[in-house]
Image (cartoon, rainbow, N blue to C red; front, top):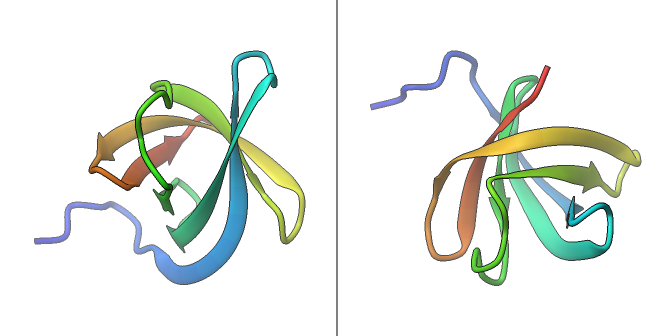
Length: 81
């Protein structure tokens, strides 16, 4: 059952998870995206904090986000306003 308030568009964009005062970067793939959140694929979720910035390589936009759910290699995030 879909619990999201807004439908996310499927996508396949490269991105970067940035944290630790911009000192740490982890590559990711954005699998779906909406104005309020995204699903990110990563090699591993180990070491990724609850709050971080995600940068989309396609347009160099950066959004602050918070982890809502996670699996072994996926993160569901909500964007901060």
